[in-house]
Amino acid sequence: MQRIAAVCLTLPALALVPGVANAVPWWGEASLGVLSTSGNSETTSVNGKFTLDYLNGPWRNAFLSQALFASDSGDTTSERYLVTDKVDYTFFEQNYVFLAGDFEKDLFGGIRQRTSQTAGLGRHLLTGPKHLLDLELGAGARQQQEQDSRDKDSDLIGRFGADYQYRINDNSGFRETVKVESGEANTFSQSVTELKLYVIGNLFASIIFTVQNNSQVDSGIKHTDSTTALNFSYNFGKKPG
Image (tube, rainbow, N blue to C red; front, side, top):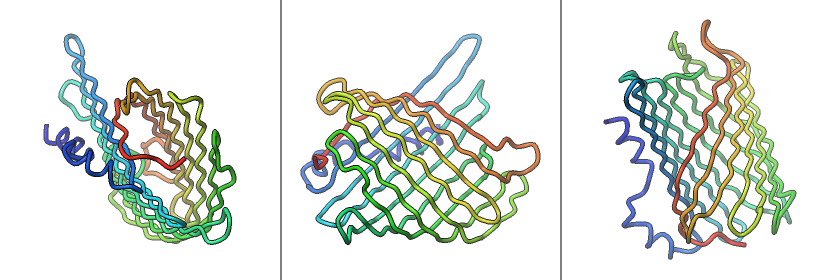
């Protein structure tokens, strides 16, 4: 129950949502997915997601927090927490500079804990109205901890990022994000595929498929992890465009 409570902390208090919704230029979404079975098999799965974005002239900020917890017959089988923040400044037409910070803790993944700080250049290749595409290249530092051995590494990394969004119609959309952080100790790559379908008003359902890969892990631990989440979400604020 404590871990489930931690998942729910990634969601904002609903009482605060109306105030944020009126605080243009902020917008975001709060999501929660819960799955429980009983009988011959007793499983519990809870995942939460909260995003908050800001856009004012050339400045843009994107914040994301996620949590995932799963158990089978009382034994924890998955527990992961993620917090990221990226700020960028458009300085010439569709080009921008960015600063990004990531923190992830995964008690059952290839790497137990990963923190990175990067800076670089990006370009808005597609700007809508149906298609959006951002590409980024950067460099920075990363600190990580191995899963079983608890060994810690710090190294310099290169970063590549891609974010593609497709507005299918007024009620549905598709998004694909890819991130690669490569250093001497490890190359971490992540793909997140999301399909969103609005149900009524600001309420929508989404299916999110996440694949993560670490090139260097402890012996006996798999390099690749994947999760599929079905969430119900509330969208607040007004996204530009």
